[in-house]
Length: 116
Image (tube, rainbow, N blue to C red; front, top):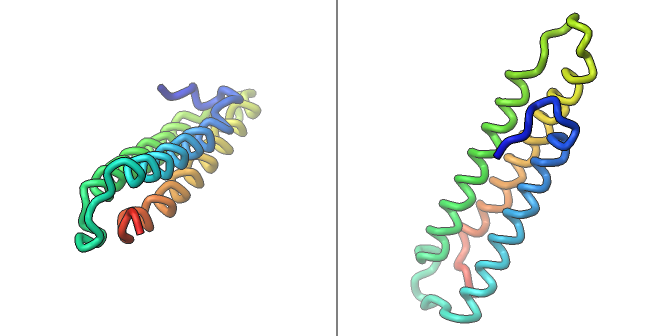
């Protein structure tokens, strides 16, 4: 689900999605490592890293798409809807920031062994 670009909640929705991703990725790794840790000899090439990499990619793409959607569908300048334009453009920047942050959180999870 994506909010309309000019809805005030869309300003913080990207950060909410990023926080949800953060909890899923580190909580998931913690639970899996506690229940069924992969052998240390595998290094970073484990199924956990594969799944977390895919989840990170999906969240990053969703947030990047949300940024593009808010930027593209902002009302044009000079139509008397400047407050809607402002909200949509700020939301686009927040979505972009959340996408970069999601990528930054997912990268170490994919590059390092999960349960060391």
